[in-house]
Image (tube, rainbow, N blue to C red):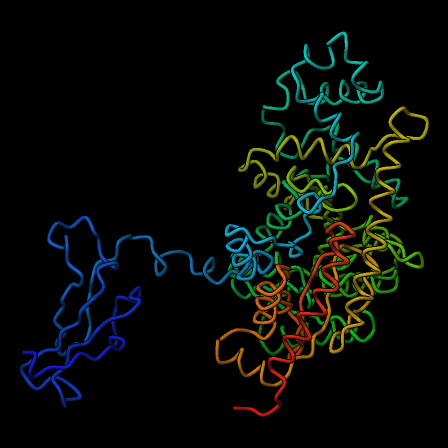
Length: 554
């Protein structure tokens, strides 16, 4: 009765229905628990039950009695729910499309101008496609009578474009670009990739060891799927890392073992750090280290590893029978003239003690100066991999039928661009060089701008597409973040977004040393827009620090 009961809103104790957002307990006033022989009532929100039940129509709550067992057993809307789904998938996180980006999309839908610097997606922020690539792709896709066999084709396309399209259409076969291909990729395109690697490294590459994939991410997923067999298997990853690695490792139910890059030494790698991380994982935690991921040039850190750094990693992996996964998708993005990209394969082949190193290298058409992210072109090369394992990787590729034909074509075009003397070469070189020089200027201006902000420090971005500054925040900001159950850099990134419209990724999504706070930003927006963003970075940081200026802790 209303005169003898009060409504107290609180969680239902020991409820087996974990999807409840809230419950309301009816208890007898003045009693901590129902008297003997009586029960408490739970008023359960209707949204947790099937709205198709006619008995529930028009009702606001379902009433359930709670006896001595103190449990309830409502039927959820769906048998496949957050408790029955893959818990590995639930635990998987992918920061570059996480909370901050979701909020940015909401603001964009409301009409706010958002500068997306959260992901390396060049054409989404204004980079124009390279003409030669698009022309060849168009002629490969067009029906022959509208393209290569049309009498007017030479008036619309350069002769070398037409010749390349004819060659590629012949390699694809009469079914054209709309049909499935060999699961490992079109043979002629794999030949092109193998010739590119041979010329780059000075050591032979075999087309049979090349897989064409839906971007490098798909290749990494396939390899980790083949490597991981039990939950004590572990993959060593750099910290900071690109979160595709931690995401896939979580999805597969394995463990990640971080090896920290030295920020004070330009994100360098040390043998001591590698050995220490491995020893702790193996001897203390009982893990089985299956592979080590290397990202060069670095993402999110922007460093270009020296040959000596790569030798350290190759020798370490060879010594401990660890498969080396070399993520080299930014190999053309090197801006510091004193640095050069050296592939892990070249170092492995030329370094004594690495003769038996197991190595898989990854490349992509999404980065470089191409930026054709939506084409999903990627590849991996297997070096010194067990032939049986290779057949199983082929089986895995077969289960997906094949990678997209547009991506396969894009990969062939990337590794075999027009040559000097060909009709398209001059325009191609002009467009590619313009992109490179602009990226080079933006890399310098962004880092200089961030370092000019009091409380920010940022290492040079010698390669890739990113800056990864460290940010000092007032103690009260850290307290506020904790009170809102957010990492400090997530709170900072959300504040930056709301104030300026700039969307960055909290550094915690990539991993970092305890106590470090920061974010990752690309330098891909057009130069005038990036210069405005640099001013906004400074304005926001000053406002943010002023808001939390008091050092007293509440």
